[in-house]
Length: 203
Image 1 (cartoon, rainbow, N blue to C red):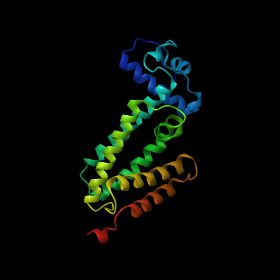
Image 2: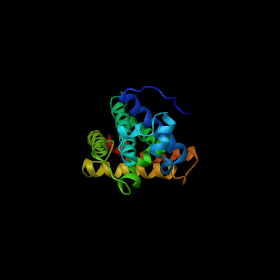
Image 3: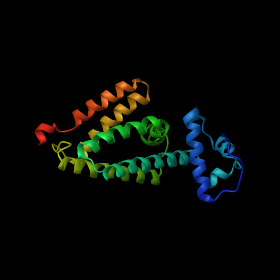
Image 4: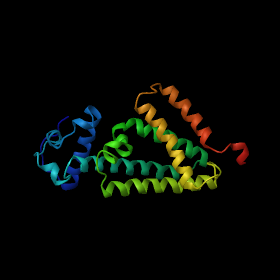
């Protein structure tokens, strides 16, 4: 839906541009996104987006950066919940895959070649991705201490390989290799069993 022209505060227009850009790539793909189309959708002059994002690459970096902050917030909120460590980890697996499916276009920008190989990740995006991964590794260390994840290697290596499993399953569903949601639920439960220390041996 096209937004009518109006006076925006700087922050409001930035938010509106990001929301409109996310809508365009969701409905038409990254290739269809242009600064001109974005301006028309938001209802501002065709030069207005350039006051906030110098080019399309910068805009895509901002979308990916926002995705990392959202992902970090999901993790931070979950870590505060009053459930067992294993229950929280299981819930995180579900939430991670849910986010990847509901925001697949953003997820592609966060972890795909569009920015990291074909484009040019800016410093703000690099910082957001590193911060999110740091939060993840810190939690992995806690989960190792709580006998949820194995302590057979460093938190970094366990965190990297555990995340690789999550990312791999997310990609299978995003790319249409698996389509049945019943499959996803069964596969998540099995993944948790594979990744977690056996409860009987950790007791």
